Amino acid sequence: MEITDFYLIDEGRLKEILERYNPRKILVQLPEGLKHFYPSILTHIKNLLSRRNVIIDLDASPIFGSCLMDTSITSHYDIVLHFGHEEYPYWKAPKNIFFIKLISKNNISDDTLNRFIKFALDHHLIKLALYGTAQHPLESIGERLVDAGLEIVNDIKRGTIFGCWFSDLIETVKMADGVIVVSGGDFHPLGVGLYLNNSKPIISLDPYTDTFRHFNNLVYGVLKKRYYKILKASEAHAWMILAGVQGQFRPAIVEKLKQEIEERGDEYFIAHSAYVTRETLGNIDNNKIDAFIITSCPRLPIDDLSDFYKPVLTPGEAFMVFNNILQRYLYPW
Ligand code: SF4
Image (cartoon, rainbow, N blue to C red; front, top):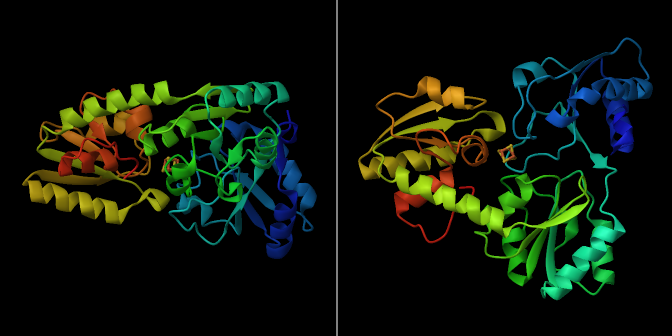
């Protein structure tokens, strides 16, 4: 199977980079779900090279986003071609990393869009904020919605969102009756729901399943679980702050958490890890730790560690505890 069966590669940018840097050693980075396509990507790159005997290797380390990569590997290459993500807004990647767009060939069908339009009209969702992930262009969907009498309140050129960064949504949502998130799976619409405190209707348009889904019930369920964790953590007096690396190192947030904990008269420990799993927490846990705060990826406590036997909070949740402000859920920090 070829990657081009499913994605359009930003060929112009790829060509330009290869011509400009004429590299001898190239490292390829692909998102987790696309790594198995590497033979077809390598052939694709080879066909664009003017020089022969170029080394092209795959980075097999986890690539969950453009926020985290192993620079002890990337620094050995002339250029690193990172496919499928845009640059993480909170981090400037090393100069030899180049982001190449992959545009999904999966589209929302006319039938699904028509059903969504009827749903939107029936539920008075007329003014819509339209956002999505880097792989899914928003233009044609936006045009179709406008043609049907709906209004898009944001500039869709700035419509790309990440799991913890939502472009200008906090401003545009004030004008919107609801938010549409074009992406595969639950990850991004759930992030939007947490970020907005479930305050507006959130609809996902999923090009992989060709469906639309109302997301507020799912967000509500997750919020209920998070509030339970927050309340449990409010009894803690000893905290483990687990900090990340690269784009997931957030020194200002770590400092602020330390200050808050000191002001409470509580104790804290700090640990660093590029990747955090249940095993990571299990290995460093002991009877002197009451609760964990993960400052690297704010989705880890919510998606991966929500059933850990001690409370594991995001920075936003920890600030809710320290400032005793529970009325509004704070995501991500
Ligand atoms: S949600 Fe996590 S993986 Fe996604 S961009 Fe943020 S820190 Fe990176």
